[in-house]
Length: 84
Image 1 (cartoon, rainbow, N blue to C red):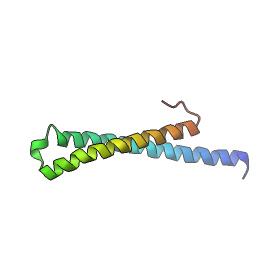
Image 2 (tube, rainbow, N blue to C red; image 1 turned 90 degrees about the vertical axis):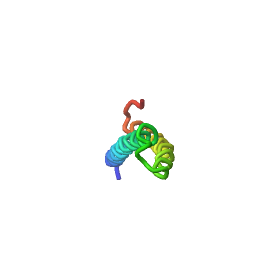
Image 3 (cartoon, rainbow, N blue to C red; image 1 turned 180 degrees about the vertical axis):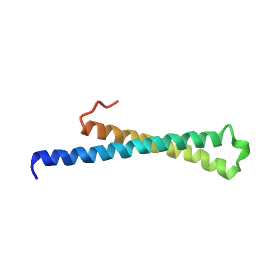
Image 4 (tube, helix red, strand yellow; image 1 turned 135 degrees about the vertical axis):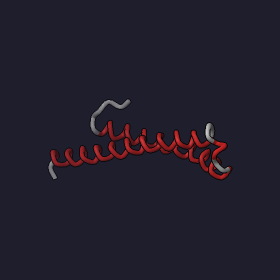
């Protein structure tokens, strides 16, 4: 495999990685907002079990958000983009 083909393969992989990381970020933000809404302003409409699950999921989704951001930074670096 020559160098040009190898670089195209890496670019394709990093683009896929960036797309996946962006998707993880979007989904995790939506789920964090949803879990916060269930945990606090609308808590009286949900059972104690649902509220407990919502509090726990807030922490888990925050961790997934952080991992998604790190993966996004890795993909951007691999593509030669500015990492912010």
